[in-house]
Image (cartoon, rainbow, N blue to C red; front, side, top):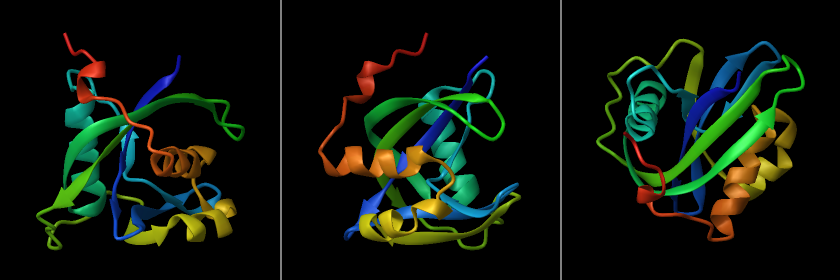
Length: 144
């Protein structure tokens, strides 16, 4: 059964918001991301995950895309719903989720140069799609 996940794609002044997190393969960089919880919309999930992992409020403006990926280390399949948006209202007093070390702003080139330190290939793929102008209206996904 695939895992439904969400991710926030945030770009400011040519840099993208990432988190450095502890994984079973060492510290890795990822967009603010996480699993969809029961009775939660995808938009609610990406807002919640971004706040929990970065202490920023995330406002989605578009859907970047849906990404299907099978993790080679644990054989899990992921369906990632990546949302483009903006952050505001940083609350540095909030504790970050367990396993999150810090937030980092990194350029696309820095990510390309450090691809081996990214949590998954989805991280850079999402950035490249964003830079290529890919986006869809939020209304593409219907919550019933």
